[in-house]
Image 1 (cartoon, rainbow, N blue to C red):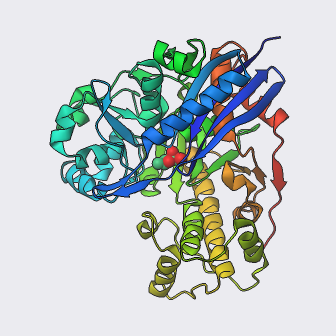
Image 2 (image 1 turned 135 degrees about the horizontal axis):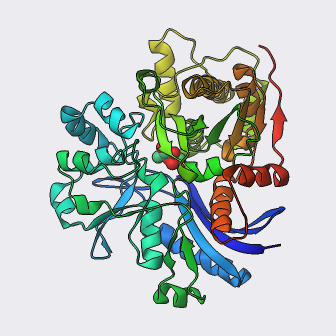
Image 3 (image 1 turned 120 degrees about the vertical axis):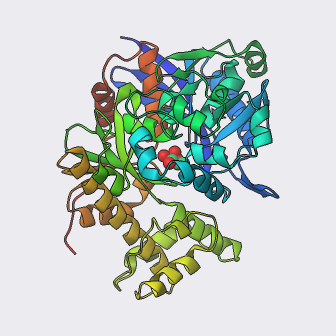
Length: 472
Ligand code: LRH
C-alpha cells in the first residue's frame, strides 16, 4: 500500500516546530526535526512578532527535514490565527503586530460604531474577540494600509515567501471576521463599509489544494527539489481538530495550548442568539465542517505567571509547581479566566488577587495555591464550555478530548473530567502537526477518505490516556 513522507511547519504563540510525518494506511509516525522559540518583541509602536526570525527558523527546519528525508512529497504550514503581514510588491511593511497588542481597542471602537457585535455575528458567526483581524485592520495606520497590496495571514505569508503565491486559506480566513459564515466567501460589502481596500483580501484556497511549489531560489537555498506546498487547515486549531481521535458522535474537544479552544464539530454554522450570547464562535474546519467553539484563556495564564516569577528571579519549574499544586488541600477559588484583564502580558498573580478581592473571594497566597487556583478555574471554564457547546450544537457530550500541550497536564485533565462529570481522553500532544500531516498525506494520495477515517488512524496509532471523573 501507499507510503510517504510530508513535512509540517507548526507555529505556536510560544514555540514553533518542523515535524516530518511518515504515513501509510496503518502508520502515522513523526520525527521532530526542529523546535524553536517564538518570542514577541515590544518596540515603541507596540508588541510585534519577530516574523523574519521565525521564517529563518522555518527554513532551517525545512533544510533539516529535506536532508533527512529526500522523498518528502509536500510541505504544509499552520500557525495561530488572526495576525497578518502587509505586503507591498512582495515587501513586508513592518513586522506583524501581536494579537495581544493593546492597539486593537481602537479598532473595536471604530468597527462597532457602525457594526455592533450582534450585527457582525449574523454575518461572520464569530465570538467577540478584540483581536480578530477586522479590528486589527481598522486600527492600522491608513497611510500604511494604502501602500499595501495584500494582508496575508501568518501561514499564508510564509506560504507566499516559500512559493510566491498569495492566497488565503479558508479555515484561517474564517477567523478574520471578514468571511461570511453562510457562504464561506469574503464579505466584500463589510470590507467596503469599513473602508478596507478589497485587494487586501487574496483569493481563497481550501485545505488539500496545492498552493504551489518552492520557488527556485528557496529550493536552491534549501538544497532541495522544488517540493510542493499544500494548503492545510492553516489555522492551528483547525488542524488540531482534524487529529482529535473522536470515534463517536458524542464528543467535545479542547485544543489546549496557549488558548483553550473548547467545542464540538457541526455541519453548519449556528448563528442563533443563544450561540452569540454564550460567546460561541463558528470557525471553518477542514472539509467544510464547522468548529463551534469558545476561546477560553488557556495555559497562557499559567505560563505568564511562571514567566513573571522567573523574571523576579525565583527558581520556578513547571513540573514541580504542578506537583505542589496537586498537593494543595485547601479549597481553591475559581475565578473567571476569560476576564479581559488577563489578556495582555503582565503580572497575573496581582490580577488574580484583584479579581478575588473585587468578588469577595479568598485570594490564593502561595505559589502552589495560585497555580492550583488557575488549574481549577481553567478546568471549570473547560467543563462549562464543553457542555454548553453540546447544548448549542445539539450534541449530548459524553466524552471530552483534550489535545495539545495541555494534554500533558494531568492535573488539568483530571480536574476537567471531575468538573464536567464525563471522562477526559488526553492526547495526542502534537495534534496540530498531526492534522497538518494528515491533510497533506490525503492530498498526496497516501491516505484515502473522510475525516472520520483520518481520526480513526490517530486513535489506532496514538492511544489517548483516560481520566475517569470523580466527585468532589
Ligand atoms: C490558537 C489560536 C486560537 C486563536 C488565537 C489567536 O493558537 O489560533 O484559535 O483564537 O490563537
